[in-house]
Image (cartoon, rainbow, N blue to C red; front, side, top):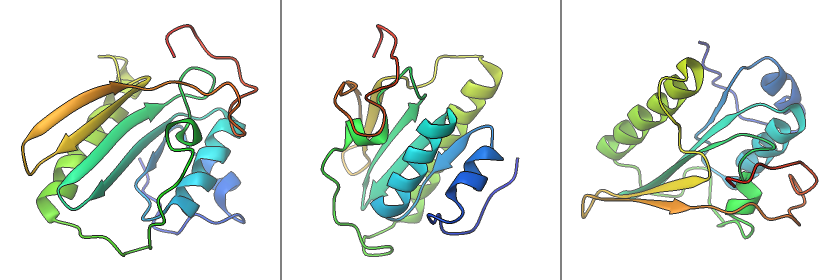
Length: 151
């Protein structure tokens, strides 16, 4: 496994995604998230999507043609600054461990990853919830891709 420490840009996103088996998205903003999502759909690469703000986080696994993509989940994007939100180390550590488990599930097929489910995490209240996510057939990113009945 190789971590890429570069920002995702229009110029490098295709080469980054093409050289990967799985993308793990934990970018600070939706500009990078959108670029990565579009490239993963274009190149048919799975993406583990993880985000956090303060004591809250979310996690899901996106499989192009099988699950909703990031644009289906968030058609209207928050206006996040690259580093304009609070980050608590224990929250990012928790989310990183859960993200790593999603990657392990994808690689080993040992267990079912969060497909068409968005795990929402409120660590202030210690509440975890799974929310069913739906693929938008009109999505500009993945709408023309075939999708299984489970999405």
